[in-house]
Length: 105
Image (cartoon, one colour):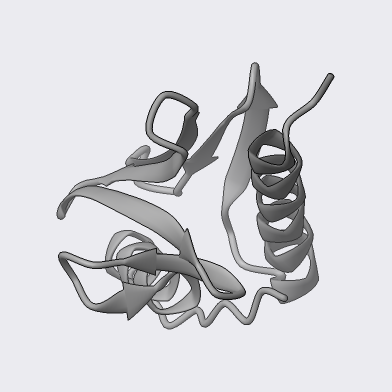
């Protein structure tokens, strides 16, 4: 049986893929085993993966590692005081070297 956490993560990763496709940004991605890897033209990467033991979404980027918890109706990084949309927009803009804004559901 799939947990609500796993369903939420799967929906989030799919929404990120769709947002990248819709944006037309020069970002490649690949999802294997619940790990979404974003690859930028300079070969840098942002990696998003589930941490089932803690019910968190983790993001690894050049600027650091971030742990997000589900709060109310969205992912939130307490350490950065940022939503997933804010954090993902920031790290992808840094690595893409052009503005990109995520507005995930």
